[in-house]
Image 1 (cartoon, rainbow, N blue to C red):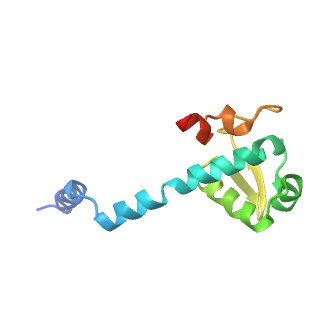
Image 2 (cartoon, rainbow, N blue to C red; image 1 turned 90 degrees about the vertical axis):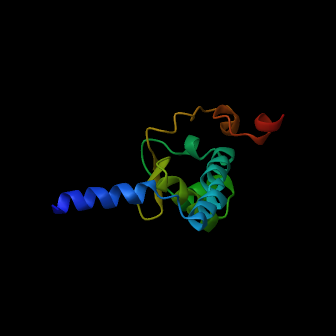
Length: 120
């Protein structure tokens, strides 16, 4: 049997197997992290503070009154999912996705992630 046929059979059998329950549980349990990070960034108005140039976490923390290390971790999570980009160590910029930046309005409500909107 040719190697390509073996590879196709192996790939097909792997994709038809049910997912590992422990991996599913881990993904489910940690799935809230990016959403929570986005909510925090929206509440702090991070997208409004990021302009055309990258901004340091130090400056963002100073502007928002947030803990610098905690804010850095939040921004790294959001960079992992493409909301922001880390242009150099501890400096972040907008990506095309945060179109919710709209000066003067409540960021969390503009993007529909306020818990009050979910349950209220």
